[in-house]
Image (cartoon, rainbow, N blue to C red; front, side, top):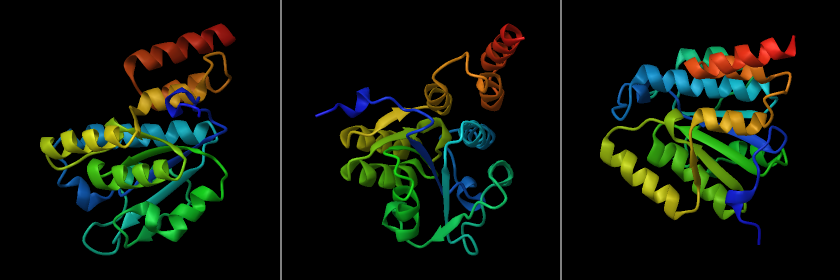
Length: 206
């Protein structure tokens, strides 16, 4: 049996699932800065879309207590992308969400969500149980206390979900710094060292 930790993540086998990055939920985030969280999840989405990775986005009670997606993320996503609004706690239990992912035929799932221990962890664990290789981009997830973050990470590790960060996911999917899209991907990631790498790659390509 193949060790899922050894299976490469590529732009051709990955799908990005963004769960409940909503205005109302962001007001409760305490484990990291809200500005940092907005930056990270938006950067992850931009890089994934540049690489041609399909994105599935979902909300809970968007017309009620949790509100719409944060504007920074909504602005990154294609205007014609349907954000699936659901009632299930676990996004994987919504037939539309699971069907959208299954219909792509891709078995590498990258998940980010607010909150980490529920919105990200629940579908990642459920997908893992069904044979997907799931990764959670931890710094593109927020939650409401340090304890929730710690227990969420422990639960994910116990379930065999791979923990990573938004930039590592994007770079792993990029795979080759000589790729024509590399400068744009590093620009999407919006990190000082990444910007320098992108400029260096672009200079070499000229």
